[in-house]
Amino acid sequence: VYRKAIEINPNNYEDYYELGEIYIQQKNWEQAISYFIKTLQLKLNYFKSYHKLAEILEKQGNKKAAYRCKYHHILPKTMLVKFCQLPPDYAIESQTFPGIKYIEIYPATKINLSPSKTINKNVISPLKRKEIIAAPAFVAEIDGGRAWAHSSIGAVITSDNKLVTDICTGSAELVLSSSKLRPCHSIDGTVAFFSLRSKKLGFFHWMFDVVARFDLLFRSGITISEIDKFVVNNCKSNFQRETFKILGVPEERVIESDSYPHIKAKRLVVPSIHAQAENNFRSTKWACDFIKNKFLDREALDKLPRKNERIYISRRLASKRRIINEEEVVSLLEKFGFISVTLESMSIAEQALCLANAKVVVGPHGAGLTNLLFCQPGIKVIEIFSKKSTIDIYWLLSNICGLDHYYLIGDKFDDSYFLNPGCKDILVNLDSLLKLMRLVGIA
Picture 1 (cartoon, rainbow, N blue to C red):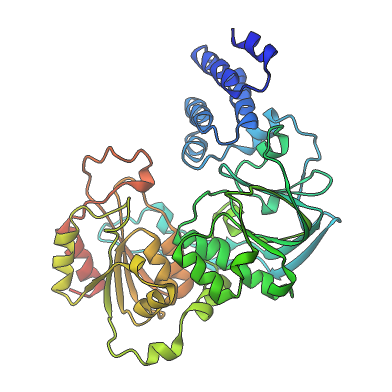
Picture 2: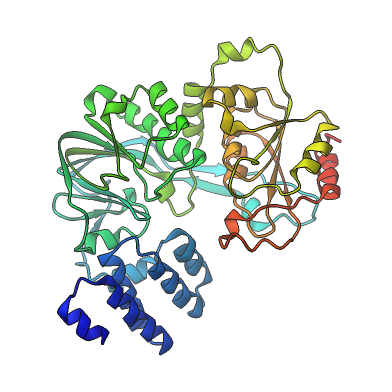
């Protein structure tokens, strides 16, 4: 039935999806994959296909790839190459392709890391690596290049249809092989492309995946006045508009890829994307220094009448990763001189001032900890994770900024609301928190 329907209308993505479902039931993984890939090529944001592909990867024993596929919509490169039917020379890198002007700003750097500390004997593996490599940072200029940013994919493509893989994010091969992209919006001028595959960028990702890359643009010798249009995913939040005002980016020159996902430019300028690197390491020293220099008002810092040295960062206004017994946690912390802050209600400049004089910072894993970059070296950090998820980005940030990182894992409780482990709320064991505070030397 579905094959017949495809013969009549080969552009109906749902028929390919249903065929994929049938082949899953038959455990014919190859055929199922081919039809789910075809579904995505026709409709890039048909996320049910990613879930089915994750199911197949799980059954094949590839749990890591299944997780990335299900929650981040990133497919294994081997799968994309095999099923997207692309020519063998479809992929290039900006440094080696003669048609791209490659401007290196920072070389690759090896960074030695200090493990986090906790009350348990064994530190969890994500927080005890000994070193990490910061990828080289550069700017690529592509005459006649085009770019796509939507549906969990960010793709940069040359005028002769080559995928520039070192400045793409997500499963960009799907864009290159798709016959159903939205029409291309052409701009006869210079376009700086900052969009990523994510539709909505939270505070951490905005600061390190967008704002920090302006440092690369400026150091390449390209000025704001040379850029006709700046392309970002969206620019509706107060903190986004605040950063652009400080960076000197006029609002009338901003294009949101949420509305115009497919852009072609006479001259396309793309600062490199650390989120594209295999280790996902964003918080490089140069990025931290750039953000700190732009947003921390040192004169205002010296004039602060009161300096809060012990800070608890609350996520009570957030929709996920909240501490469900926060009143009890705050009550305990207040006995040791902590104040509770909700950083979402502050400007970036105010957040920077709030954290700049801290001696101890406690908080659940979340965007507020981005402001650790404004802290002085040597301060103590206690990061609280849910039982289901430990992510290393703020431990890495602490290493780069010279901070002393500790962590606490929340207790297990029934939290079936969020399917994604990274979104789970947190139940804090007060005895464990107090024990960790004693280890830190603050109780």
